[in-house]
Image (cartoon, rainbow, N blue to C red; front, side):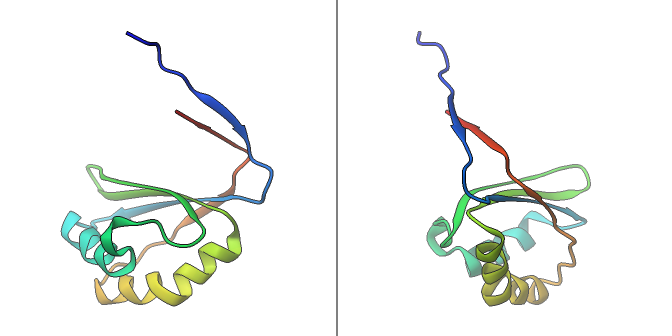
Length: 103
């Protein structure tokens, strides 16, 4: 068996991470929004990574974006409206990404 190999990738651009904790948000609500904004489960322009899962309190989503501008454009053009339609009120937390380690 081969050991896990992780690649170190220094982030040189102004990548942005976002964490969304949706207290009380159901998986059905998440899937409603997902199918509206990411058809066929493909990343949006400028999105590097998307992961979502359920916690005891609701939904948790983590994303990495190429830039704050790409994230803002996605929210303004797609996500904001889809969240309203699904009756989801969230307060995302964003941060500047300084490093990404992937497999």
